[in-house]
Image (cartoon, rainbow, N blue to C red; front, top):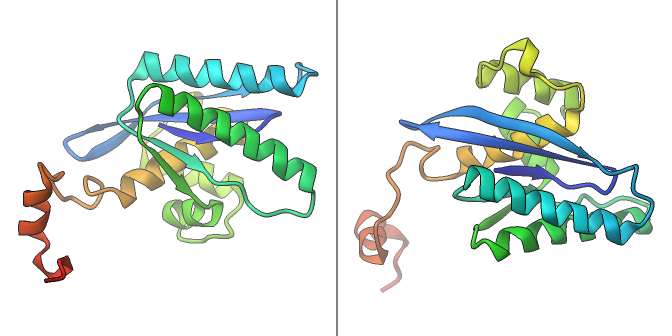
Length: 179
């Protein structure tokens, strides 16, 4: 599951991975501008993320890390939205992975400075998403991009079998163990 946090619009995407092949299960946005109270927005984010987790039962959550901007108030609000989404995942024992926006864009398009439209276009091509399933809100594809970026970074995405235990990790990575 991937999330693009925000207090105006929160985007999310769910990937299904079968036989090491990702496909889009769902994506969407949560429109929050109608709520005037910032704390009510945070409560709505928490409830929606918990609802998504309970509906789709994701193994992991990939979330876009806040980028550094000039507006301190915007950064604070974005950080709170991210924190609430993370708290929802923690409350359901879902491991969390953070990715910088540049890292996500690089993973999807090969260009860390790609426009949101380029990210959406590449996701559509990579995941074979029909035109009618694409949403006009690019926050949705940003959430899906976080999930796909995480898939690419994971052992499964690199074509490796998950580790069964620490002993399995050590036996498959002897060069990484200091003796």
